[in-house]
Image (cartoon, rainbow, N blue to C red; front, side, top):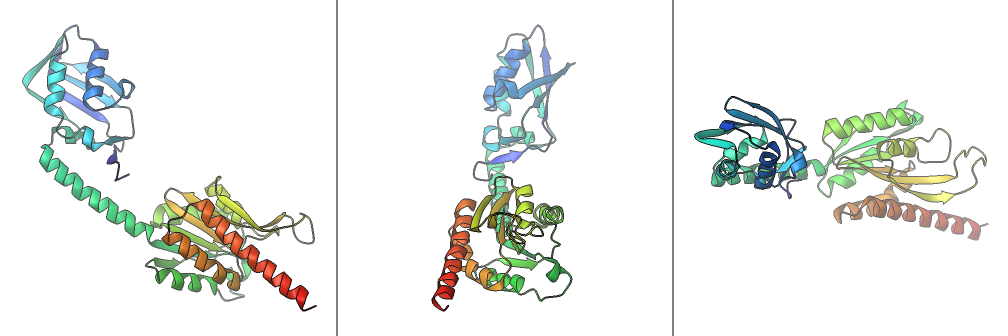
Length: 304
């Protein structure tokens, strides 16, 4: 967002022009001139009120490029005065409670202020991107039957590459609970990376992949192994990992066994540092687990 210099209008989209009077003026012509000066389409300009010596309009969009509005007061009033039936006094002024107020700003001063604000946004984005939280899932972990060794392992590895890492409370095997807590962490906690461990298997109790898909229906889901559903306790057709996105937060679902988590971390760290997309990360993690499984099967067959 900062690279494009787009700023949210935050519903403060109203712009009022004082010191302007109309007599037989064409509102479509007024909207056309305003849209051209502010680099908008005519459909994004709506004149909402004309009375006495003022005109009020609304910008019908959520964000605006600040470069297109800074210091545009003079040229805007000049172009309006050229429209037949529009009379602009020397004391005409523009008023807005939001980003549109930049129209009246001194160009040099405004650009410096925008540069500072963009630097601040970039720094905040960088810090958020390097904040992570780890959740382990499973009844045995959440009720204290077994020690959570995954979260501390992930925390240590991520901190070595500069992340600030928190460990969340263990999560129940429930897709609604998992997705709800992850959503809350993402929207309220300011994390650029969320990692879960466990719950990716083929049993009915394994619900982490389903939770990720609730957050990102286009999450990258890859199989580590496949088999026929309904075999033994397996109600699903395989074991999967998933990598999704919600807002700008990456969500990674890793396996539960500690040795498998350890195997995945080298791949995950490499892909995070190279800014791989979710599909590449998911396939690389799944590929690592598939090769490990094949090695174990081969070793087992050799030692029979």
